[in-house]
Image (tube, rainbow, N blue to C red):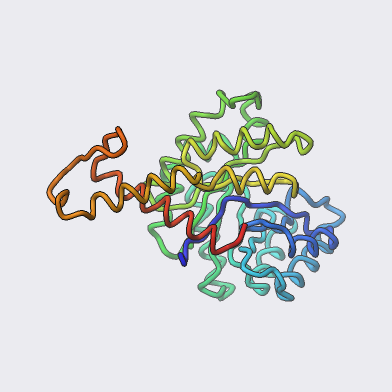
Length: 294
C-alpha cells in the first residue's frame, strides 16, 4: 500500500450549505475545499465560518483531505477566517489571490503569531496576471519552510476575467499560463491543480478537460459539482495498459542481463533508464488508487 496523497478530484463545497458539508462525507473525492470565499455571499460569511469549522472539528470525512479556503487577509473577513481555520485544524488552508511571494511571507508571519499547528499546510491560488508573471518566485517560496507551501491551484475563471482571455474548448489562451505554473511547481516539488470546469451539465466536456490537464502533467482538477468526480478520478488515474507496461519496464531493467544497458526494447518500443522512474510513479499511483477504493 502506498502513502501517496492523491489529489485527482478536489471538490469545492460552499461552507454556507450545511447539507452540502454533510453530503461531502460520502462523496468519492480525494480532497474537499470547504469554501468561505467565492461560494459564500457577504451576508453569509460569519455563518459559513462557524459551520465549516464545526464540520472540520466534528470529523467524519474519512481519509478525505480537508482544505479551508479563507477570504484574503485584506478583506473584512480574512483575519477572522484565518484564526478560525487554524483552530479547526484542517489539513491545509487555501489562500486566494497569491500574486507574489510577499503574500506568502505575510501569511507565514500570521501563522507564527497565531501559533498555528505545524501540520497545517498552505495552498496558494494562482488567479491573477501578477501571479503568472511572478510564478517562479511564488513557487520558490516553498524553500522557506515557514510558508508551509505545498500546492498551487489555478483559478482559471479569475484569470479569464482579468486578462479577457476566452475559456474556449482546448483552452489555447490559457495553455502558456498553465504550463508556466506547472513547470514552476515541478521545479520546487509542489502539487499543482487545474482550474474548474464551469458547465456542470456537460460531464463529457469535464472529462475532456480532465484528460487534457492530465496529459499536461497536472496532479488533479478542482471541481464544483459531484457529477464531476468520476471524470476526474478516472482521468487522472493510469490506465490498466499503462500500469501493465510500467510493470514490464521495471521488471525488465531489474534483470541481470540488462544491468549495464542504458536502453532496451520491450514489445517493440525502446525504453531508457529514465523511464524507470516514470514507470514506478505509474505503479505507485495505481496502488494508491486501489487502496483508496475509488
